[in-house]
Structure formats: C-alpha cells, structure tokens
Amino acid sequence: ALVYAALALVLLRADQALGLDTQGRDAWAVGGADGARGVLFAIAGTTLSVLGVVFSLTIVVLQIASAQFTPRVMRNLTGDRGTQVVLGVFLGTFTYALLVLRAVRSPGENGGGAGFVPVTAVAVAIVLALVSIGFMIYTINHVARSVQVAVIIKRVTHDTLELFDEPLAGEIDARHDPDQFGSALPEEPGETIASQGDGYLEAIDAGALLAAAEMRGLVVRTEAPVGSFLLAGAPLATVWLQGTADADLTERLRSAFVLGPERTRQQDVELGIRQLADIAVRALSPAINDPTTATLCIDRLGQLLVRAASRDETEVLSGPSGGHVMLRGPSFARLTDVAFTQIRRYGAGDAVVATHLMTSLGEIAARVSLTQQEPLREHAAALLMEAREVLRVACDVSRVEAAAAWSHEIGAVPR
Image (tube, rainbow, N blue to C red; front, side, top):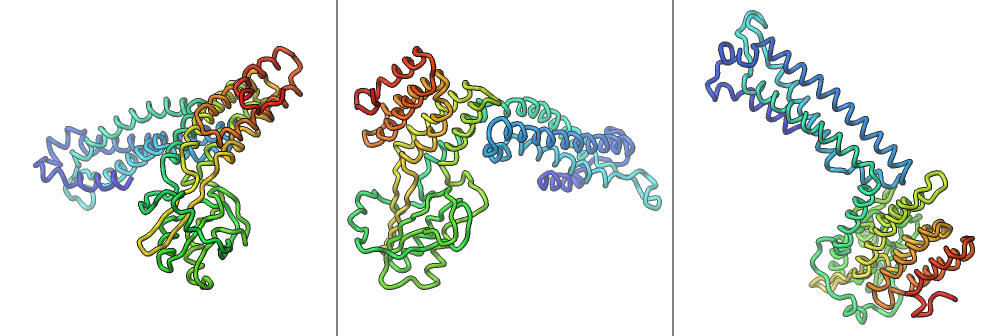
C-alpha cells in the first residue's frame, strides 16, 4: 500500500515532465475531469468491495481448516504468501485510486481555478485495475486449492523440512563436531539458569548465548527443548563457570530464551510433526472417518523422520575466547513418539491404516541407523499388539502381521 501511495504521488507530477496537457486534448483522452472521476470512483469502490470478499474467503478457509484438520495449521495459512500478495494488491490499488481521485479538478473549481486531470496517473490506475482482475482470478483458484488436504499437508511438510535443513544455531558459523567437545564438558555439576516466566519456548538465540559465554569463558548447555511449555523455575540451561553467576550474566543468558503464548515454526521442528499427527488423528475420528488422509500424513511423517535421522541432535558452538554453547535439539525417539503414538492408538482398528503404518515404520527403519531403529521397533510391537486386540477378522490381522515382517528379523515384535 505504501509503494502504491508513493507511485500515485510520483505520477501526479509526471504529466508536466512528459509535456502532457492536463486541461485540453490529453485530458479528454481519459474522459476529462468527469470521466477520470468516474473511473477512479469505480476502481476505488470495486477494489474495496473485492478486498472485503477476499478477506472473507480467507476467514472461511481458516474456519474450514481449523474444524476439518487441526487449529494448529492456521498459522501456516495466515502466513501464506499468495493470500498476502492478493490482499496487498487490492489494498494498494484502492489507496492509489483514492489519492489520484483527490487531485482531479474540473475547470472553475476552487474559486474558478484551472482544471487538472492527471492523465498518466489515471491511465496507470486503469492498468492497475486490470492487474487486480488478474489477481482476483488467481485468488479464486488459490483459495480453492488451499483447503485441499494434500496441499495443506505438503505445506506443513515443506516448512518442517526447511527447519531440518537449518542448523540448530541458525546462521551462527562458530560450530564444530559435538563428539570432539565431549571431553571438554566439566564433570562437576553446573549452575542452573531457571525461567522467570511461564510460556512456550518459541526460540533460542544461539548468538546471544555464545556472546555471553565468550565474555566469561563459560560452558553453556541448553536444557529446555524448543516448543516445550515452561513453568516459572523450570531449567533453561546449565552453566559451568568459576564462581557463581551474577545477576547480569544470569539475565543475559535468560534473555536468549524467547517465551511466548504459543508454539511457532521459527525453530520448532516438532510442531510440524505434531500438526501432521493431529490431522491424521482428526481424520481417523468417527465424525470425519477419512483414513486416506491419515495414510497421506503417515507418508509425510515418514519423510520427515528420515530427514530427522540425518540431523545432529546436539550442536556445539565455540568462540575464540574459549566459550562453548551446547545446543540440544529433539531426539529421534522423541520425534517418533510425537509422530506415531496417537496415530497408532486410533488407527489400530482400521486394517488399512494399521498395515500402512506398519509398512511405513519398516521403510523408515531401512533408512536409519541401528540405534534409531529401536523406537521404530517399539512402535511396531505396540501396533501389532493393539491390532490383534481390536481387529475382529483374522485376515486383517494377518495383513498387519505380514507388514511387520521387517521387524521379525531383529526380534522386536512378539509372535
């Protein structure tokens, strides 16, 4: 809107630079003062009306997504760049037309002064109106697609994969292999830095932690995972230093932990997995009864877990002055539990979902290390036990058992 407003102010002065007659023949090319007013009135009124419709459609999409899938995908939808651009274009066009409209004067107005028709600005307003029509066509298709479950699942997966591709420390470059740092971690107990407030841990400022560690040559290890809810007094980090941490150091370290009222996608990789699991659980409820959506979520969860398996769970930052910061991310076992515990519980009674989940566990296990296979084997064992309890037809149980063949080789599933 600000760019469009600046464009209007510039083009109102462009006629003189281009040598156009704003009162005679050139003015009549855009319909004279009355015609220019009519065009600008139509553009301003129409764009404002369409802006209200687009906003209403966005609200409807949010309501449908919240009720049909999970309230936790609303942040993904409100952050959709396409919707933001459409709203911005219509709001900017309205602002532009309003500013240009104010400058149009007929001969004799304002005490008999000369008329003024900003030819260039009015012509550009017509072009902007046509551009807005194109965006209106785009938003109809965009809104229709944005409520499709496959699109929502893909968006959540893409956003989470982007977080997995980023290091725990963000853009901080002072890092090295955590295995090389193991011997440097002091054996004596450190001093705990506790939270003073309540809320969700939305992010950790690794740069601020490293700066504080460099000032005193500290060793700092984070204790609270991003996305967890912290009560006042909960441990944020452990610090090893000579003596006792003073108030200034404690405040510097505590300020690096950002608390807020809700979980965000800024650094919380677990949130994306939670969103997909929630969509799957909602799809398995008797009110919706959509097992196909659940299998789509299981596929994407498998994709995320395979990517998570290749990411370091611990990252160490080291500075030139001897400061060290150990950042601890969510473990593979934790992410596996978040992904499959509830789906396993509510999907065990559906032979198709149970078989698909068992197969997916095997596909993931084939792509991770032996240590990371352990939580997958545990979920496979639990799924088979639950399926045997709730499935009434022998052939359905046999299908799930056949899908669990991958885990028999390592003795995870009781026969």
